[in-house]
Image (tube, rainbow, N blue to C red; front, side, top):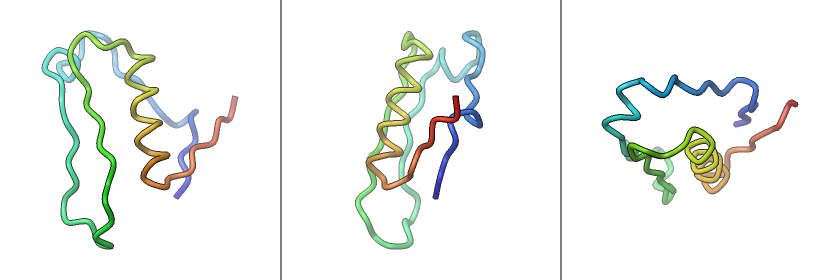
Length: 68
């Protein structure tokens, strides 16, 4: 699977997901492979969130292309 950076969208700072935070969890992974998770907390900058999510995608074996 490949993800293009230009396809990633950042929500506005007033979106509820930033105020409340969220955690990601695997749901019945098909290949029983250990998944690397990431956490987004209120107060994290958009750049830090993006960096954490990209790092988790890479750890999970997803190729990320920078189309700048």
